[in-house]
Amino acid sequence: MKRIITLLCFFILLSCNKDETSPNDSDTELNLYFPPANSTEWDITTPESLNWDTETLDELRTFLSENKTRAFILLKDGKIVVEEYWGKTILNSAEFNKDAIWYWASAGKTLTSFLVGLAQEQGLLDINDKTSEYLGKGWSKVPSEKEDLIHIKHQLTMTTGLDYEVENADCTASECLQYKADAGTQWYYHNAPYTLLENVVSTAAKKNYNTFTDEKIETQIGMNGTWIASGNNNVYWSTARDAARFGLLLLNKGTWNDQPVMHDTTYYHSMVNSSQNLNPSYGYLCWLNGKSSIIIPGLPTSFKIPLSSNAPADLFAAIGKNAQFIEVVPSQNLVLVRMGEAPNNSLVPVIFHDDMWEKVNALIRE
Image 1 (spheres, rainbow, N blue to C red):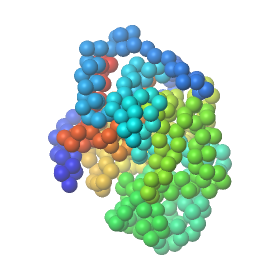
Image 2 (image 1 turned 180 degrees about the vertical axis):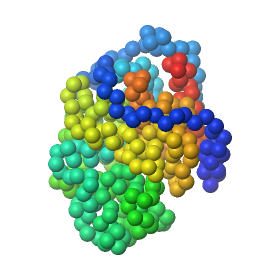
Image 3 (image 1 turned 120 degrees about the vertical axis):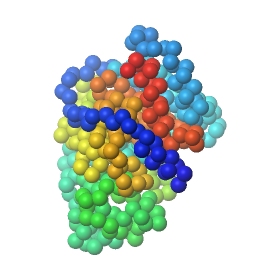
Image 4 (image 1 turned 90 degrees about the vertical axis):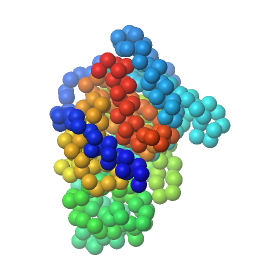
């Protein structure tokens, strides 16, 4: 409760709204470097060569370290400019480094969104299909005529209308999936309908979710992560560099070094732009900055502010619990990755995120 009150106060105090941005659909050709998919090599460039303010770099490092960050990577034009590691691995068995893995938490939702797009592109499903075509009739306790209103697209946009006030909002058992509103009329950050997308994709593809991920994305771009079951959830784990590879793929609109991983530009466009009017700061399982309002996880209320007042207005992001960030800024050819534990108690993640970008802006002279 204290955290929610702090968050509400933060929103009330925000007085500098950014104008709503244009869609992330620029056709400008990007001049990007891509690390080899079959190698650990990755070109670097220095902050000095970019005329960044290196005197602010130590302040950024200190801020990240003091807020329990394990890994931080900043790419410019695909090359590594900043790469830092702190602390121990998840099991406290070794120093955290570029080979250590960490959980993505809900940042993995954006990876799932990309996988759904690939499944549609290959004719395995259509996001306008009823969810029951893949999970079977009665996959929920919603009356059948209301269950038929729920399509894959509603799972991608957090608009299934399922009751989020059940005892366990992560529970995917049918008895936990109850009616609250017609699909498409309610926005709430509800994990269970999202988690079931794994079953939708696996059923459509007739293969294991990890196998599908490996074949369709990981092998193409050199990622080496894995989905691991955790209670009702399925959580993606990888190194920070793997996360940066995914961010770079998103920056280049689904293409890796001139080789399209996702050919469907319409789906990609929808993924990284407002997917509905209820929460314009949300695409297909992807957070968007620079919009006129936002509904944040855990609250049904819309606030007339953007995701972040300090981050670039065209930023879109995969964001997970405890401030896991994979963020893309098309206007600046930037990819930012932050992995770690929850920030200090004095900073709820949204405040930490805004403060982080204040320091990144000082570094890159924005």
